[in-house]
Each structure stands twice: as C-alpha cells, then as structure tokens.
Length: 557
Image (cartoon, rainbow, N blue to C red; front, side, top):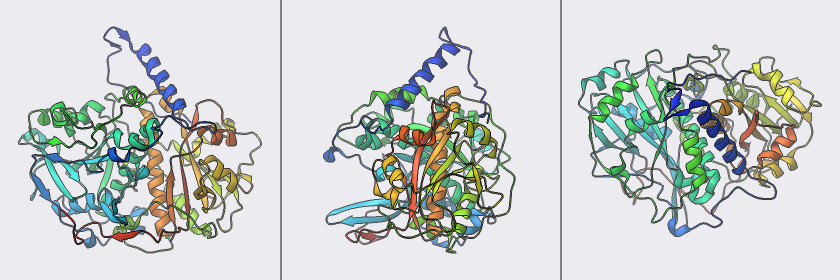
C-alpha cells in the first residue's frame, strides 16, 4: 500500500529555511484547509452565503488582440466506436493537422449543446463541471504543422477557435516536438467556482481538471493517439509555457493557475520541457485576458492551499499501470464515440425505479481498472490511489448494500485495517474484479443523508464515495491535487459508461465528508473520501429547450 515517492528537484535549504520545516508548514496548511473545507451536518464549508447574480463570472475566457484560427466542426467524421475506445483498441493514428486537433478540442472541451428556459440561455460542454461553472481552460502547444504555425494557443470553446497567444520561431521548440506529438495545457480560474461555492471551490476546480484530463485522453484514443501527463513539470514551468505568469496580460483579469501538461503522441518519447520553456520566453506573445466579473472576492483559504500545493519540478516517474487484460463486456448501446461524448450530461433527477443490469455494472468496473495504454488511465504513471465505495440500491443480481471496489488490489490489507472490523469483505462478481460486499443493507436513506440530503443519491441505481490514499498528500502536499484529479477521472469514466448503458450519472460535490468516514469506520487522515457520484435513469426537465452547440440561428461566432 506504499504510495509513489516523488524525488523533488529542489535545494535542501530555501532562503535559509530548512526544507523539513517548510514541508511541516505545508502539511499543516493542507490539513487545516482540508478540515475547514469539509461540509458537516451542523455547518457547511465557508461560502458566499448568497449568490450575487449580477456579478456571475463570464463562462468564457478570451484574449483581446490575438490572431484567431477558426476550427472546422469535424467530429461527425470520426467513425470510432465508443466500445473500441474503452477496450483500448486504438484506431490508426492520424496526422497532427488542423482537422484532427479540432476534433480533439471539440469532443473534449467544446460545447455539447445550449439549454434555454424563457429568456435565459446557457452552454453545456463535453467536459463536466461543478455547477456548470467551468473553471478549466485548455491550451495547445504545437510545432509548425501543415496548416498551423508553431506556438501556444488558447482554446475558446464558445466559438470553437484557437487564439494564438505566442508565435514561436525557434528551432529548439520544433526540435522538442521531434517525438511526433502535441501538448495540451490545462489551467484553472478559481474565481469561477468560488463565486458560488466559496472555500470548497478549490476542490471542485481540481475535480474538473481530472474530468478534463480524462476527456482529452478518451478523444485522443479515438483519434489513435496515446496520452501521458508530464509528471516532472513543476507549476512554474507550466505557467511559463502557457503564459499564465505574464502579469501584464492579466492585469485587470482574474488570474489563471497552472494545472498540468498532457502529452498527446508517441508515449515512449516525451518532449524536453526546459527547451520548450526557453523558447517560449523568447517568443512574441499576444493578447490581454478579459475580465470575467466586475468585482471578485478573494478567499484567503484558497490562496493558502494554492501556495501549499504548489508543485516543484520532480523526476519523471516510470509507468506502473497494469498489463492489458481481457476487454470489458460490451455496453448495452453500441454508439459512436462522438455521440457518447456529446450526449453526456449531468443528471438532475432520477426516477428511483429503474435497475442496472449486473453485466453493465461489471463492465463499468472493468473500465475503472488502470490498464496500460487504455484511456483515460494511459495518461497516468502512478498506481491507482482512489477506490470507489458503492452503496448499491438496484443492480440486478447483486444484493443491495455497501461494496468496496479496490482499483489496486495491493491496498486490500491496509484498507481493511482502516475500516470497521465487522465488515464481511465477501468477494462478489466475476473472479477478476476486486469487488467486495461489506454490508448487505438498504442504504438509500444513508446515501441521501451523506450527500447533503439530496434525493439524487437515494433514487439512483447506485451512489458512491471515492476513498483516496490521503497519506500521499501528507507526504507530498502537491499530491492533494493529483488525488482530486484522479477522482475526476473516475467520474468521467462513469459518466461515459452511464450513457453507453442507457443511464445517466452526476458528480456530487456536496457531501458530508466525515459522515462517510463514520459509516466506514475510518479515523485519521490515511484515507479520506474526496468525491461522490451517483448513476440512475434520468428524469429530464420538460421546461428546458435544447439547441445545437454551434451553427444554430442567432449563434455569434
């Protein structure tokens, strides 16, 4: 059950302060934030108290004064089936050209529809977000391509176009991309979530980043490409490459913070980040970021946890994903990947009656196992550190109750020791799946109570909490973000699997953390529940109208 160990590329002494003292301060700040940001039965985490609708952030970041490249709407040309992608059967890798890059952004970070009610209209996107607030921004870093010049581009999902932030004419930049691939950068704007959720928004931004990582990995696989996170890159490097450290470009705008760089291309040859950064520093940069709100509240707790989880440069980790295994059972619906990606929605209500076939549930569990070269887990080099605890309500052939699914079977002894001694730990399901029945019992009321009294947890086929190996964050504070990312990735798998099963899913960020721990019998901080989820048969709101994402009458590109 040993978590991965990162080697920090840093001096042992920083400005005369011993590194161990700094680490102790970071760990204390992390734990204080984690405890204060928990929802509890008798109080919720600090929030704004009321929503200042007149000051709601603009959901679209754009840069004034930049060259813009219109992307083709080409997703309908992608023939790949969803089942092939989830089974790790990659299509023949296409060339890196404008059309394929357009598909990558359209199906991962682009709009999926517009919804309207009366005079109000809002966009939905392929990547889910807490409260549909979308703090996540996407960037493209590429060498000179046949129909795109070398540089750094920001993706504006509203108009499906690239904004060229940096034009780069440096041979070292193109040389760094000699491995045949591109980089996708992900950043977060905390204010978009904090406007509604206050202190806990920082967690939700990290969840959304994980959803985006998984969404990009899936689409890349549908295009025949592998993905890998650049684990070694520190936040300063990511900020420098994306231009987020250019204060003059964000003078009046809400800041973006760096999250991650995702390599799309040859997985056995990663680019040299330092060479890229050196070239970016000499580049010609364009644009000023737009201001999203007339005024912005500053949450000191978010500023503190942002500093505490700042990631330094580390050594690259070797791949540790599981070997390929038999593909998961085919889903109930044989749909194209593009259709699955665009129809994904967050459910707002379930019927409380439908049941999920056991075969569908077991297929979903297969897809949660982190296998090498299979999306979205091909993006990670670390072993699985997030494990779902299911409250099954209506899954055919399985007794209602509490179940543990251990995505890394090596944690069995440690996780059993951390939980109640009376749990059964009775093997359930197919022999190859590490699924265990802990408690046979109707837990619908329990699920509703834990998930902030929301019916959607009780009316589902199942609800779950994601138990994370939190001791990793205590050893390396920046891993707190990584655990939340992995939770988001688990959620993205379940989102797409739900659609393929004729169901729908939803992430649940509002839950009573320690009530979940009390149910499991967990004490201390070795394990913590960091995200909740549910899946069932949706009940749609007939008052809402749906418009296509792009090209409808009145759409302003």
